[in-house]
Amino acid sequence: MLLSGSQVLLPLITWPYITRVLGPVNLGKVNYIDFLSQVFMIVASFGIPFYATREIAYVRGDTLKRGVLVKELILLQGIFALIAAGLFALVSYKSWAEQPILCLFGLCNILIGSFTYEWYVQGMEHFKFAAVRTVFARVLMLVCFFMLVKTSDDYDIYYAIFTFGMIVTAFINAIKIVKENSFEASKVQLKKHLIPLWHFFLTSSAITIYVYFDTIMLQFITKDALQVGLYTTALKMVKIFLTVIIALSTVLLPRMSYLANENKREEIKTFLSKYFDLVITAGLPVCAGLFLLSPEIIDVIAGSMFSPAVPLMRVLSFLPLIIALSNMFCFQVLVPFKQEKKFLTAVIAGCMVSLSLNFIMIPLYAAQGAAFASTVTEIVVTVLTGVMAYKIIPWKMNKKLVAQCMAATILFIPLVLLCRYLFSSSLSILSASIVAAILLYFFIQYYIFKNAVLLEAKRYVQKLIKR
Image 1 (cartoon, rainbow, N blue to C red):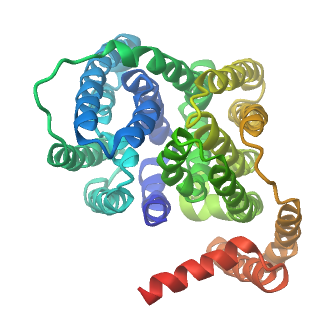
Image 2: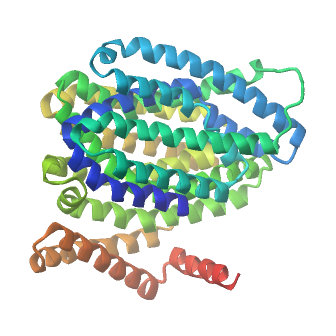
């Protein structure tokens, strides 16, 4: 939660400044190169993050096996990173003529991002270390944003700061890997990893197509940096809040992998039921807030220049809940139980839906068409993976809790309307609505409905205080 909190708070601090300094057009230029580099970072990773997290969790208690595994994965990572960097340089050759500095940093991000070794940190469940390290790196980036980005022409510097943040993360993680592992001379067996990695790579590639290609297609079809800037701004603001909801997902993947390896199905079923309750309890009010307060959020965080992004944000507003559920199905059930082929089937279906809808909707509705295609695609993937996961582990869905959360969330509508009637500025409306909604939601869930998630959270906090 500390890690996720920094992912939310730091962008919320910097985003109002960055959007006003750079503007939607220059942000569109940066986001296009960034999204393009993200595509090739998937090639560079070649499915290693998913696969390695699970495999490290399996052998974390055996230092000899772990050292060999880490060495093999680092070698594979290096090979794939060089291939991906070469492909990026070829595919983006036209962009190099127009934005050479942005493309250079995009290339650096592909190489550096491949050696951050997040899979080791997650597989070993070093979450305290990850939180402290990431907060440290993000605070450094925060300072750099305000010190170095001064005019609209500083968008190259803005992108370079992200590269700097990745370097800091990679350096700190590399020190930890060297300290905790012994890399003795031994025969390297890379081939045994290639088949499972191939399945994960295909899955990652399909996910990449429907997660990143909407932005690339939007630029390719409309050739309008403004449309790209509006769309990516709305998408990023929505996904900022996703990080809080899926925080538990990152923590549970290595734990679920361990339990699946031990075939402890009842424990897994208990975890899934609690995780589902948490996602619904936190996800519904967040999504409702994003939908109802889109005008104020855009105005306060991005500025009036981005007001055309309001309808886009409303279309995308329920993505945090939808993606959180698909994360639960994929990474807490399918991946731990080595059902990569089923996972792949679902994301290929999502890829086909995404490409089809984007080709149809973007020429007609530009950024709004891309937003619609993105939402429908995530719904399709969530439904398919949900059906597959339930067949493996039929967890208990608390229908009563779902109904209670929906009932409490509906009350946000008159609350927001009242705040708009009482206040005139966007900041006042947003602040009053958020505070009032949180208090109202908590009161109803805790004192009236006796929400199990909130009751358990209270017990957990009390234990922390006693410590």
